[in-house]
Each structure stands twice: as structure tokens, then as C-alpha cells.
Length: 176
Length: 114
Image (spheres, each protein chain N blue to C red):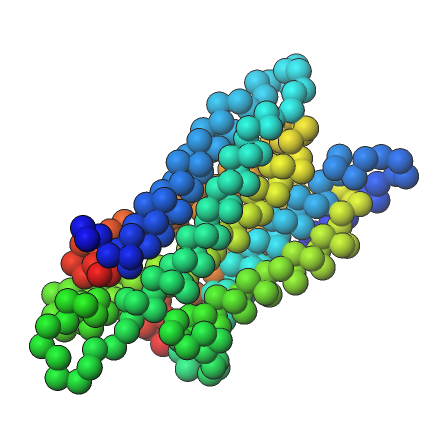
């Protein structure tokens, strides 16, 4: 078989569940910026239902990403090898730690990926809640819109950063 | 902490006041901070946490505990603010600080200083 079940699950975690929020967050951010009310005389109008759907779908994808990463892929990554095993290719954590040149992929990259994406899921959920519940005033209330954009932007930065680090780790020590 | 501008008048639709949004924002900030605090205390050895799910190790406990604390904080804030208009400035400033601290506390180079 070209891809093992573990490899497919890792791709689902990184590309499908992790990639969807990258697109959703970028789209929601762009819409909130582009559709802001122009000046004090601008007519009030609600945000479209599609914006709420995008943020909710993004939040759901974020939770799938962190749960799949933490409880499915991470255990495969950290499985310790049997003592004395020379070929560490099936044990990603041991493989990256075995080489001083790649040890940072665990000490920095993977340890960043362990915790920070959970913050993104929390912030993405809060933004989705506000976007859905306050659809009628989101575009016309600067304070609500700006804070929602800040949450989405921080979320996007974290997801992009974690995704990049994930690519590095999986390039050197893929889960087979 | 946030200043309450005023309670909503009876009959005014709940969604029109900003209390629920402020609760979601501040709750998110508290969630980020609490997750960071749990990670910081556990990774620096100040608090030992058993693994909820052995294959994942301590990460399972840190993550689940952080999420539970976030949901509790959000729930309490929501129940208190849902019918009120809240001054956004203090909420935003507090939230931004909490998020920054939460991110800092989960940043590995920072944790290695301790």
C-alpha cells in the first residue's frame, strides 16, 4: 500500500483538519476587514450567514485538529523504540532526538505544537460564537468587529506557525 | 476588570447587548491564560499531573484541564453578563494581556528558562 493508515491519519490531521482552518480564518478575516461599515452615515446591515458558517466550521475543524493531533497522531510520534534498536525510522521522536542537528524538531517544534494549537481552538470558538450570535451588529460595531478580527488573526498566526512546524517534523521523521 | 454600563431593559432582545460577546472574549483570554498556566506549572515541575490518557502522556491532562477551566470561566462570565451592556475597553485590554501570557507560557524557549 502506498500510504499506511497512520500516514493517512497524519495527513488528515495536518492537511484536511489543519488546512481547513487556514482557509476559513483567512476568508473570515478578509471579509470582516473588507465589509466594515464605511463612515458614520453608512447603513446598518447584518453580516451574511455564510460568515457565521465559515467561522463555526473553522472552529469545528480546529477542535478536530487538536484532538486528532493530541490523541491519535501524537501517541504514534512519541512511542519509544525497543532498547538497542538501530533503525529508528518507525519511531519519529526517537529519530529526531538521535541527531543533534534535528533534536530541535522535538524540543522546539513539537513542544510548540503540543500546546499552542489548543489556544487557537479556544480563540477560534470564541470568535465563532460572537460572529454567529452578533451577526446583526458585527459589521457596524467597531469594538466587536476589531476584537473578533484580533481573535481570528491570532488564531491564524498560531495555526500557520504550528502547520509549518508540523511540516518540518513530518519531513524529517514522518509517522509511518 | 470590566465596568458594567447598564442592565438591559426588559423586552430588549438579548442578542442586542454585548455582554455575551464580552464574556466570550474574556473567557477566551482566561482560557488561553489558564492553559498556559497549567503548562507552565507542569513543565517546570511545580505541579505534577497524572496522564489522563497514557499513550499521549501528560499532554492529555494539560490540554483537557485547560479546556475545562476555559469552559467554566466562559460559563460563569456568560451567566453574569448575558443581559448587560459591558464597557469593552477594559475587557479588551485584559483579554489581550491574558492571551499574550498564555502564548508565552506555552512557548518552549520561555519554559526552558526555568
